[in-house]
Length: 232
Image (cartoon, rainbow, N blue to C red):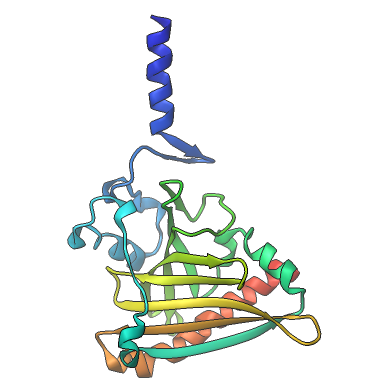
């Protein structure tokens, strides 16, 4: 009898994964706790998952930049200098508190899903470190909050040797393409963080007239947050 009990207990423990105050038994869109996501646009974007026939969050797919169709994409590049050794910057970036990184006046985190851990994390959960397979749902505040935009990004590649991180837009959002963050070293031993974005949507006006200015503000805020968290 005791062996039967231990067997059932083992199965239950393997099926339910807990992390701080997170406890997820399955990861279909129905398990999302929308009450823990304050941003209306992020909730709306998440509710589109089922419309795309996605039964489980592990089936989320990204629409990355397609080099065979490069002429249809817009390109934007932004760079900032961090006065810190490139090795230190990279190591600290890999271990950042991601809630703090995506916490600002313009960009805020709504929810994160880890494909590796098969877990959902909300803004008030504690999780650190970035890895491939993490899916971020962010809220972008436009025009002082008059308009907001929900965006979904997946970390699709981390290259330790080239010190680069690649994000792709999820396929149920309004945009498709790739954001890549790269670190390079200056001649005086500092680090340059460069963010290159290749994107497109169904609206050429949005892509060419609206997106560039707002995107630069979002990137500036993220880079400022990174600098504060890394340098202090």
